[in-house]
Structure formats: C-alpha cells, structure tokens
Image (tube, rainbow, N blue to C red; front, side, top):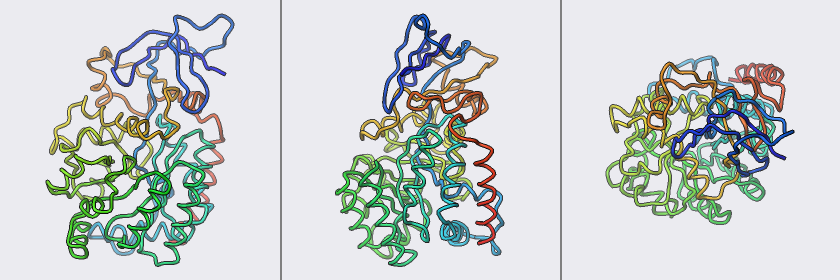
Length: 418
C-alpha cells in the first residue's frame, strides 16, 4: 500500500535541492518514495498545499527513563559536582523505576519525539531494580507510537553483582530478538571484568557499545587512578573502537591522543550540548572526528531540531560550526544507521513542515533556516515507515490524553518513592 502526497515542496535532505512534486510513499520498514508528476487518477492523497516535505529526524542519544523527571522535587542537598548530580538525582531515580513507570516514560517520550518530527530514537536505559524485560517494554511502547529504535541497557558495577547480572541477562535476551547495542554507563563504574564481558557480548551479537565517555573530568581522573590510562585508550584496548556500531557519548574531556584515536577508529560520537551546559561539564571539540558526530538530547527532550540549534550555538566558542556544518551533524546519524544496517530509518520517514518564513528558502540557505527559524511548532504531519503517525500535530496511533494522564499518575508514584 502507498500513501500519496500532492503539491509538495520536496527538500532532499542530502543536497537541500527543492522540487515541486507529488510523492508516492511506500509503506513498510525501509521502503522508499517516488517523486511523481502528479498523483495517479483515482488515488486519494494528502494535499501538502506547498508545504516543505523532507526526511524526519533521529535522536542519537536519549535517556527515555528520565521522562517523568520534569518538575520532580529537588534533592535535599544540592549537588556540587557532576558525580553528585548522578548520585543525588539520576541514580536515585533509576533505582526507583518499575515496569509501569518504564512503560509510561517510553510512551510519553515517544509522543514528545514524534510531535517534534523524530521517527527513530537511539536510547540508553537504566533501571537497576527493574532490569528484567525493561528493553522489551520500551520497544513495545515506541512501536505503539510508530517509532523505530536502537536500544541498550546501561551495564554498570555500581549497584552490585546481582543487579549487574540482571542487566546482562536483559541485554542478551533483547539482542537475541531485536537490533540494539551493548550499553555501559561510563568507565568509572565499569570494572575490567564487566568490560571484557560486554565486549564478548558485543561480538556475539555483532553489534557495538553505547557508552558515556569523559563527560566530566572525574571520569578521566578515575580511569587514570585505577587503570593508568585514559578513557578512550581503555575502550580502544579491548577493541570497542574497532566496532563500527560503537557510540561514544559526550567525549568532552579528551586529550589530543584520544581525539586521534577516535578519528582513526570506526566509532561514532554522540553530542549533547544542552545537557552538557545544564551539567556545566564543558563543550565538545570534535574537529578531529567531525565526520562521525551526530546529535542526541541526553533525555532532556525528543526534539532533534532544538538540540541542533543548541549545538550550533554552543560550538561558536569552540569549533565555530557554520549552519551547514550543524545541519550535517543533525543528519550524520542517518549515515551511522545505514552503514551499520540498522532498520527503520528508510526514505519513507518524512515530515511536513508548516513553515512560512518572511524570506525565501533555497538550497543555499536551508541550513540557516534550520538554525534561525525552524522549530517543532512547524511540524504538522509525520510519516514513519510510510504510515502517518502525526497529523495536524496529534498522534494518530494512540490516545495522547490517556497516555499523559497515566504518566502523571506514574510520575506521582515515582516522586513519592524519591
């Protein structure tokens, strides 16, 4: 079955070339599109009325488990360092999660992402006291919104051996039936034994790592004290950087040798400028590996456009990205997914943009429109795997209002536990 779009201004996401056209959108995972002179006679169509139609977006590093944190009570003692932020906020929250909270988090995060034009989420999950079946719950929830995904469970030694074994079991069970990655928290909570076991699992399932790297200086200090080497070298020594599916998240506090290692490796880097600013940990300098950096949100939201603008602005004091460079970083994740044969990011994932700027849109200036004009309010319709999942700014596959009501209930349960 095909979906027809008429009177579209199709913007090619690779070249930014704009074509006035009709579009046939084929339904199915990784199906394609055809540009047509007109919609075939007798076929119903969605009239775009001259709206821009282009490829939808991907969040390259998310923490869906944090979706119920917005507005939650602050810790009794305010954190004064990044490690204290983890200990006093996020590690307390992830240990409080149960299956119902995980499901609610995934549903509302999926809705938030879909309404922002996202059709694919790469997620990094943690729920030490509810690891069993957690990835399966998230996958089912995102499926129900109409989103594709690449999930992992955050393995760590910080919660003891029993919880670690449950996380390893969930990772192995999930990867036997789903595409995904082997998740690790960060070097400072990962022992040599766990690192070795994670590497074995990645090779067994023919995938890579998804791991936080040098998000704060304390990660490097711990690695040097315990292992007499820096974080990137530690992961390189076990072969993680040889895996083309590996994602290194953050990579703020690197030295030149580490940048060289990443630049010469097969690994990719996920950048989260808003979260880095929120945690006051610094700004990424990716000049040594700029062709393999894509953009995530680190759980703050599901809006890849907002994250790209934040990346562009934050970079001005470090890399000095141009609007074109920032747009390339937004779209780099499509190359990561394609080159590693991950499914769900085909050309039949589209957004219809209700965007009417006061200045012309051309292939030469589209990137500037993305940086200075375009935002989630312009996302009117979203097509995922050839199906309309958002129409007139409302999700089509589930009842948003009932999902949000349940999320509020689960948020209250979570906050009471905290």
